[in-house]
Image 1 (tube, rainbow, N blue to C red):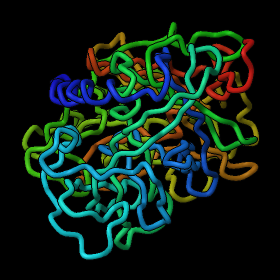
Image 2: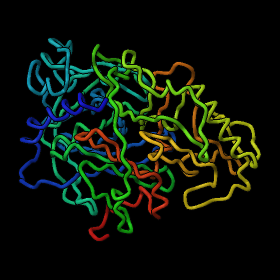
Image 3: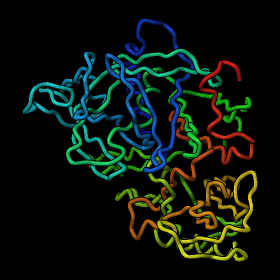
Image 4: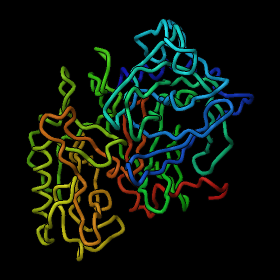
Length: 429
């Protein structure tokens, strides 16, 4: 099933976001752009936006499949432009709120106001959820023509959830979810793209809100290399807390089989389909999971096949959380990483595959040890395969909600560029 429901919800944001979105200017940017870096300790992808009045930088965790942008209102949220969204208002409907807080039992402040609609922000890092007030505030963000940075523009009334953490702790308490915020605010054809990097050398990847080009130095338009596959709607929410009947906000794709060095991995292929009643199974894309997570039987089959294809390289003791590790002394290197067996996620036909090369499959855990960067997700997980951040790095992914499809480039290292090569500082490529 295509993303029909998500598409309708997304479109319904347009009339209310577009009219008030730009402050004191008729400038209509072609696209918006955010730098994204990888936190070395948490392995989460983070960005900064300027929000509130006066503007302050807010650090956000990038959550590809999150329903809401939300911030922690108990962390000193001060803003003269913050406005709670009132119950039964049009903005409340746009936020897909299904509940209303009639009375908050402390003094009025962001996150605690009477007669406001509320939602259930989901902390996907800690797999917990809480309630949150729906609010509006100013956000400023840099525009781009796809090649160079442009002027900073403002969204006057960006809708988001303002929540206390209620015992939630650790990284990721404040997050940005994609794409229903900035893309809707500027009518960007319901498209956004991500291009993530590793944590090495303070490299910065990029998120684009809008259509291409997506130009990376030295002048390479990565949107020219995209292969397309349908996005699939999971009719059952995969959030920690949700209301009955809500579909998942995660992005699923239709992996039909897996090949390693061109050889099919023996799998129970029923696990690759989404159960339309329970919402289990299938394959989704995550920027929160550091590595790809697989249901146990899939994981064991992939490991066994990979080890067989890499039989000439000695295995060594496993290093958590990985299950297959190798002596890397004599493995060597190529443009796309270690020369190890290629892994193909076969999609809608045998001719359409997401190919994973050594740079995205092998993790250097010690000076002489590399491990296959997949993790055992146990038996009966909610989702059979979760493609994690490490496997996304230096791959451009474009999410086109109007056509319910994903465009993916496979490794940009083949094109002699990386996701760290967007020109954030100069007007000359």
